[in-house]
Amino acid sequence: MKKQQIPSLASNFAEALAAAGQGAGGRLAIALSGGLDSSALLHLAQAYAGANGIELYAFHVHHGLSPNADAWLAHCEQACAALGVRFEARRVVLNEPRKSGTEAAARKSRYAALGALCAAHGVTLLLTAHHQDDQAETVLLQLLRGSGPAGLSGMDAANAAPELLANPALVMARPLLSASRKQLAEYVAAQHIAHIDDESNHDPRFARNALRHQVMPALAAAFPGFQERFARSAQHAQSAQRLLTELAEQDLAACLDGDCLDVAKLRAMSSDRAYNLLRHWFATRGLRMPTTAWLAEMLTQLVEARYDAQLLVTHPDCHVRRHRDRLYLTPKLAELEGTRVDESDIKDGQAFRWNGEAELAFPAYGGVLYFDPAEEGLAADWLRGQELVIDFRQGGERLKLAQNRSTRGLKYHYQACNIPAWERTRLPVVWARKQLLFAAGVGMDCHHLVSEGETRYRLRWQAV
Image: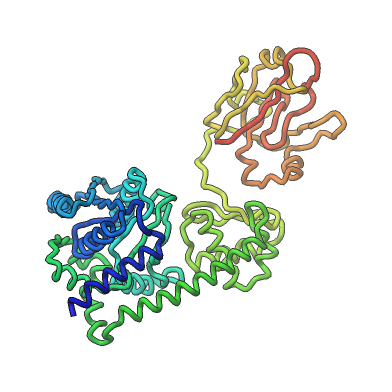
């Protein structure tokens, strides 16, 4: 049995690396914890690299959570030295473990460190020791969380994860997904491979450990070989998810208007199709996936409201807004400190003088005011002689953009420029002697513009 098992693992390993695009030559890295699974991976990778002229690296992440962490690092270093494998370790400090959970925080820090190590050594393929039992645990955990096809797809044999690894060039492959934990244990025993035992893997407070030690043995007793069937279910879910993604891409292309969605086209879809499109839209913007209940509430508020409604739904990562039958994803912006202009006391804003600067920063108003040379603009000497005031609009301000155009209220100009209501509150105005000179997002008032004589300037606002 063991004699047949060992070459089978090596053969499957080679096939998995070929599928991931790792042929002869090049560089390859493995994530090495020192446990049974990654120790088996180390030996398989070392044999494969040696036979194919590949530079192999083993990277270890030291979390410092266990009193044995230093001993594990030393064990990994010694194991790699014995095999002639390049080894490097990185120590990490967990960020806010109480907020996200120790397990999640450790995972996030670990993968970020692995991505950085791969980047430092020019490695574009990273191997992890996830196997068939891990896949079954992942599928079951996602099922218990009520996940859809994306969650039930489990782990891919290979994928890029730039948001997790902070390394867009890196592909993460799992060449042991077809092997069971039992097969790996037999391989390690047959090869007399030393490995460490992480005591945290036996702590039932972690959901995965509770499944591994309490639920999986019962499943194995009642349904022998359930891991393979779970793996097949994951493959079916992956296939279904690929079809859903393909449909979402087509729907998004049909509904997208610049950076926003056409509500009328979204409204014409079935709820399931709209949910699929919206989830894909969030994914393309790098936002956390909303729940079905949240999506239903969003559709009710934003899609079924009247055409001219100005609505907002808050997502943990952004705001979802509607303007003129379009849906926008807008960032959550910090509160600004600027006060509104009161025409009876114009100095309530931030007074300033211009002394020829190309730009002036106004952090309280969230941006930078630029002074650009122009053929028609404000005369430099006149501009230097003014006490200028920057502030947010109060309402009732009026602006004349050109001599042959009427003086109009800012509200009219904002509507003509199709500036959504939520952006208007963050667009400052600039005054001189109670005369409105400039409105961000609209332009210059024409009353003081000249086209002859000394150097002339136009104002321009850039939010930061």
